[in-house]
Length: 514
Ligand code: HEM
Image (cartoon, rainbow, N blue to C red; front, side, top):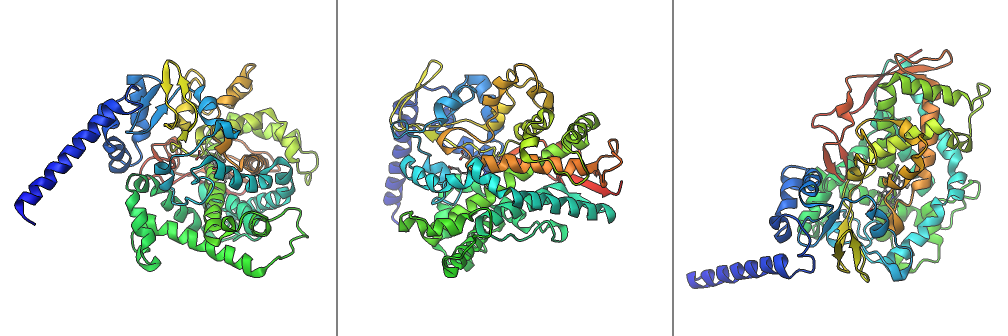
């Protein structure tokens, strides 16, 4: 290329960058919102903390709020709010006149744009969510309880076998096996019985965690996803574990949806519940909504969301009970109050009435967070007010679950696992700040199932197992923390899910006979 052409090109680029920077800093509809100039002008701030330092932007955002106030600009387009009362204003929208869209730049990174979580537009989201909601109603979750109870039994048997073999169990794998078996059964009518597999077969767990780790990279460098999708699958598979993991997950789900399609209208009437994907395929959803590719993305979401969030929360609860004998003692005593005979299993309704167990679960949900990533909402039609600041219609605004759960004015001593905070007289007011399931029209679809899984699993495991210091004669085994401390459950990085310190080997227990 000629030298003068190169110089001209350079000048054009330079002027473009200058104009763009000027527009972002001074002419943008959100230029009045405080925040660092570099964050307002470029994506480099976010890129540096999330990609170069690996999932650390969340901590920088916290520090920026301390410096600039409750609402800040964190990149050229997005605002972040830390005021906990803003969740209801920003996230809650149930009618078309009060729409909430998602932000395509952010959802694209998740890599499943045709799934509920990736759907940008409010109206399309309503159609997709409407088709899925019935499966997760309280009434239908109750129909699924025999499956959940059977898997809890299987987990207890498996931990008993582990105690006879003095096995060291990585609890995240054990709980992931449990939640994955349940959600697979609900989605496809068959599970892979991870609980019974050697080492709880963590392949799915590892693969989908790898995929989650790529989310902020793909968000910041959207073009990688475009290249990946344009390449033949065999080539894309060679682009590193994170990228190939997303392809493996989607491929598996495509095969499963195709299998169901080939089976035709299989009769699953012997079951107490209707399987999600058999039913969706036979539903009167528009044909394009039932295409294999789209349903496969929905399946990637439901299986992934249904596995990791709940299993991590179970892991956090287990660590805190095993490291705090007084809490475990109180829990085991309370559980005894709903067990009469040796074979008498308390029902979910009995368990839901137990205040201390409920406090333990809420504290696990608070410190397990669910997801840690920002998930912005856009109010396309209305301006919103946050304290003295006006947010123009169409602005992506996000809030972050861990930053609300560590708000010391709501949850004092917020790092501590204190079930009692949920039992105090004024505890009801705390419920609205427990935001692990998010809020509003895009909140977690599987919340009722998640609660049922948590109640039945924690009650089942800890009415059969004690710890080094807390044992009952009828316990079938003891779970002792092994090479594990608080740093194995304390979040250090936000990689869509909470990630503890580098080199953590996870929450491990030595299972022993009583
Ligand atoms: C304690 C466990 C769980 C937590 C903390 C949790 C948390 C969340 C959160 C925060 C979101 C919203 C993400 C966003 O704003 O973009 C979400 C969405 C979702 N979750 Fe959960 N989840 C849990 C369990 C489950 C389970 C068991 C299932 C299903 C089997 C499930 C299915 C979904 C689905 C389908 C969505 C997408 C909803 C939508 O975009 O309309 N989740 N979850």
